[in-house]
Length: 325
Image 1 (tube, rainbow, N blue to C red):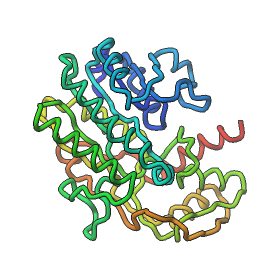
Image 2 (cartoon, rainbow, N blue to C red):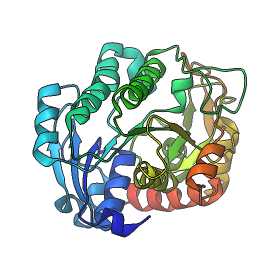
Image 3 (tube, one colour):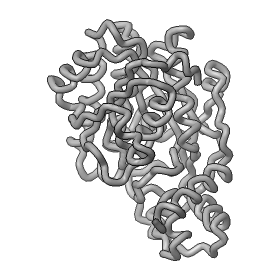
Image 4 (tube, helix red, strand yellow):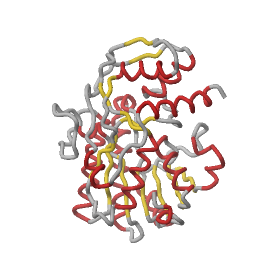
């Protein structure tokens, strides 16, 4: 991270109250950036932003990214230099239940940000969060950035669409946008216990029985949150210099693992015997999915600094303090 680059830099971040957004906000504020956060929920009761007075060091705005007029007013008022577009409906099960809400947030919200940015003279770089789910299901693994974007279900399709919209704004209008497609992000500060890592850690620490919705054989790669934060920062810093407009980058640790093996590892690190029930009721989810991040390693010189064991230990220490507080 080049701290000189971020000193007094105006950064607009959508979804700043979320897991990744709160981590990225903390890192940028500590580097001297002026962070303007936009989130549909303001002042979440449980958030990393509540720690060490962080919330008082940024500007938080409650707004819906699907509201074009409101977002246009915010961006025109603050004239940001860098935009991190993270806001989205991110929970697959909720997306399946409410597809229209998901499409509004993930697709319309994205084109709003990009269309408003097209008018802006201040914006130097936009880093947009897509997902490994944007690829849909492919027989050839791991996925490279050249794999087709062909989601099948609401969340996956919303990400495929948003990803392509980012591409067209870059290639048709020259909007300085680059896209990330990440593996499963985990670490301290993730309060969404529908995700396997925080759920399994808290069950291991408290003695509760873990419920696994799938058959336990689904395969994913897991990436520690601070490694992803560094990837986003590098992309923003290098977008212009390396002419990355319209490109996409996979960010992964390239070590896929099944749900069962992951859960067993978490219990072992906690010094507990695994205790879980397999429901085998997961629907509309991709069985095997993991990424090749060779492009990010070559072009950005990015690589994960945390192994899965290191990351899980750090997360476990944090959850142990948090859930017993």
